[in-house]
Image 1: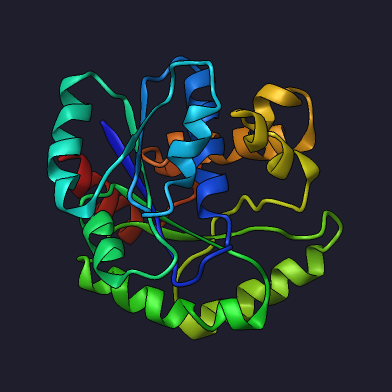
Image 2: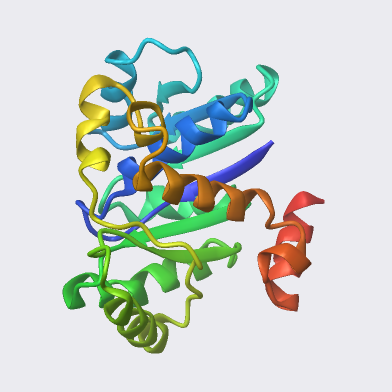
Length: 227
């Protein structure tokens, strides 16, 4: 069972959008997915209420019940668990990162958000430094230069590595959740669906250094998690 924690220090960075998108793409491949909604706003759980498909399962999960929810996901045969965390809760972010095989930090290329990465890096350190990547989100489709500038600036601020995949501003990310779906379901051949599939592909290959591009330290972290 592979576990992904999606964390950040601000609301509105796209954590839930990434969580439900990844969950739906993983389900599309046949994986049994459990999405644990740790955010009191329960946006992911509300998404599930609008949804007809059973996979992924989405469970509203108070932080005090995280262990029990993880045990239940494992017992039910989940292949992938995704932890969707609140915008500003250090204790929840640390708890989620501690049990994760991988941490994703969605963030838009805006200076006020990039400046939060230093505190996110500190939280990841408190959680034992699990494998973590910053995921640039909400870029203009043609903003290649902006993406590179944001990566350079954020790398100086936090030292966290960047995911090689980024997500752009696309209508499907906003419209699909309104009907309990994800972009790969409403626009299967669309660009948003392709971005999410590429992100899932990167994640699914993390244990293979030659394909994922991980360095020795990152590969070692993942190997230790896999036990």
